[in-house]
Amino acid sequence: MVKKFPIWFLSLLLILTATLTTQYFQYAMMGLTVFVLAYLTKGMRRQKNRQNSES
Image (cartoon, rainbow, N blue to C red; front, side, top):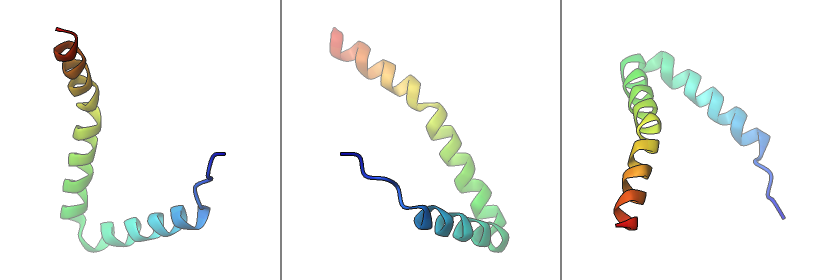
């Protein structure tokens, strides 16, 4: 049984993100950049761990 993600939580997260982005633009952009870089390098980290465990 799969639990559905509550839509009210997603809308609350969107409203909070929009509010915080307008109030603290520099910190929001820094956090967004860190998130994107971490997401993009996730694949490289995962492949390194697989190669080390196979050896």
